[in-house]
Length: 399
Image 1 (tube, rainbow, N blue to C red):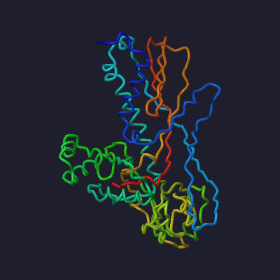
Image 2: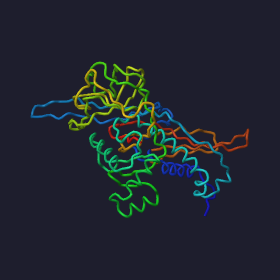
Image 3: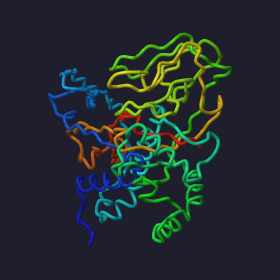
Image 4: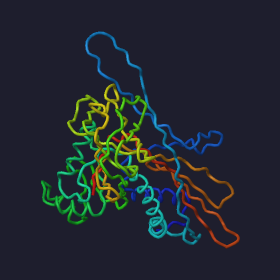
């Protein structure tokens, strides 16, 4: 039986439900929601402060060795207000909620969800670990296991919260490559029906196709790059280290991945060398002779990242070929990235307005009457922002 008249709260709740169901990458990440943004008299700006836990070194023996409690914080800026604007009449409000959702809400929510996911997957530039062969579409179990290995090296929890977002080409190749690999008949049937990898495979809670996987174009670097001078330990609060480059030409692009000869990564908990060259992502590239890279380079202490400091004239090796574009499929733990959302102000003097929160995402719908054009415009808005919280809990898979 149809509703006599749909209420704005019904419409907003249904819109949020559809939005969350359309999310891919965003659905499997951490959420930060703050209701105080829209409270009159309690403005807190447009930034959330996300606290990261302290890290300590172990004491040996009975002698007390008190350490400072160093807790780091990161700013999550809510800098994206996006929406879809539609017209719907009072007659359409007499539809039942399923018809209204199919005709009006689903197309709008799909557009919003794609934009949120696209922005979230752009955080690949913050991720320094990577596997796979640039220019080769991943199609074997080996590359997925390699990604898990790199996350294991960085002490990423194996708590059932690892996921993998692949572009359509990688998804197609992977389903074909793994269609008969130690899978139950039920999973094989699901793969065959949906053309998707699905749930609980090779250590991942979910492996899914996301057409919003970003493509990275490498910088214009060329020649043999080396460091100009040795590198010293970064402060515990630093998020990056600036490198001075002595030879080579061309610019690095933000998001390029490099290694430095003689500098291996360490496990962040036991500080033991992994035996693998530490990969760094370029976070700032201002000239041909200076770049900033993450993680910050530290050879000692609670926040140690490498087993040795880079030496003067150490060779720099780039992943990928200059000026070439590669898909950046992303393996990640849900805590690697955070999606922040907050309430928008509710306007007065309109036809109707509603604001609802579902699974950490706040959405507002407002409708008014346009006397000039005899129309009933309706706006749907979401205020959000993304932040990489723990880049070590993610690994890129080059395509």
